[in-house]
Amino acid sequence: MTKTIYMLIFIVVFSSCESKKTNVENVNGASEKETINTTLDAWHKSASEAEFDSYFKSMAKASVFIGTDAAEYWVKKDFKVFSKPFFDRGEAWNFKSLERNVYISSDGKTAWFDELLDTWMGICRGSGVLSKKEDVWKIEHYVLSVTIPNENITDVIAIKKEKDSAIVAKLSK
Image (cartoon, rainbow, N blue to C red; front, top):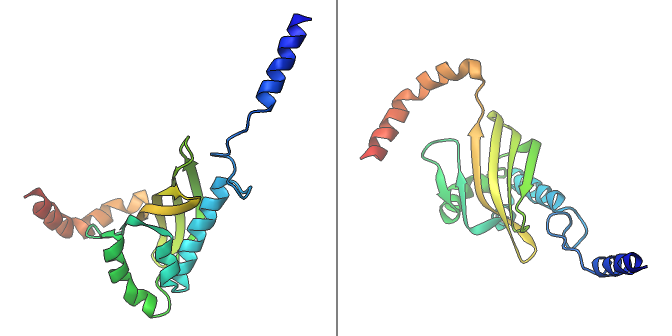
């Protein structure tokens, strides 16, 4: 009889606890990963449709975009200036995600991802970090990389050797 009472108390106490929806669902019932995927897909679409304000609204105030060139480290303010002419011509760039992996921190406030992209440069890899503030995911950090087949890496190293040497010399001072 005592075991039954303890079991009932246990069931009542734990069934009345409110479950946190941190990593599983957001307030609208969609999974956080779905929401992040939607955010990133809309961000890429904004660039392809030259929607400047929408594109940059998806990025956090202090966000960083790292491009494929070693010199491309853009804080949001500077990236907007650099990107504006591309958006003004009617299409900035058109990146379509082919595959994406999304990971969410245990507190549900930070996410990171990697993705393979179909771009004008061929397949590229994107990776980044998002933060959730006031129930909205914002891109904090994004890195775009050109993928190079392993069998072609020696040729690519030779092509970029001179420029890389100049950058190493400059940054080593």
